Image (tube, rainbow, N blue to C red):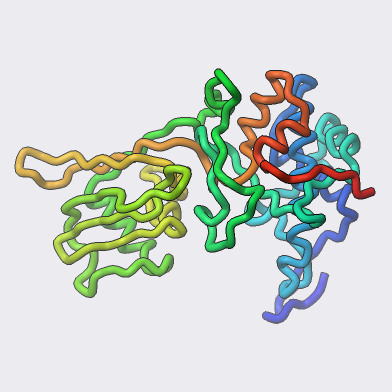
Length: 296
């Protein structure tokens, strides 16, 4: 515990990397059984690589990583689970590397059938091992198809949609017309990124046009009736339903996946393990070109 730069107390848990992973893996990959151990082992290697890549990420705050999904979800010893512990212990010291250094091993819940390149989710340089890959094998369906987040649908009234833009747009640096959002006249995908995700959404209103870029989309398009939760993913189609007078009544997003879509797809990894894939195959599928090495 120490006093931070803002004059408030910060409580930090200091752990060895392997002890830390015992609290990360069960929360990130979820409940495991024997048939899913290889997915848990892949998650352990990904989390270990992520931790080493991002060491010192929160240095200005006096520690390395947040214990939340903002970095990696870490729970105390009470949340540790025997099978997850086994996954950590049997991969001890195993790290995914690129050019000899730990990779930026991002991972997400459900990619929706195709992963995203890193620059599609964050303003970041492309990385050879974080490129878009189809989440399937030869002659197979999508690995993450059994996820409850694999396909989804959200509906907004025109007023709800305009309210989201007005409330959340400015904080996300989305330019709103001087006269306000106004009445929604049309909504369309203006551009898509390499994996097919929405790169830019164009909203035509009675006061002008509003462009919502990829990095702001999920924060701006809050899910109706979901306590302000952000949109599940940027992988969606948009449709506008009009009344008899041509006015916009409902705006509907039909989407796929949950999360940023970059790197390892956790539900896809579980399906691959269920089908007999080893952790090494799972990792090289989602982090194409990365080298797996035993560092200690």
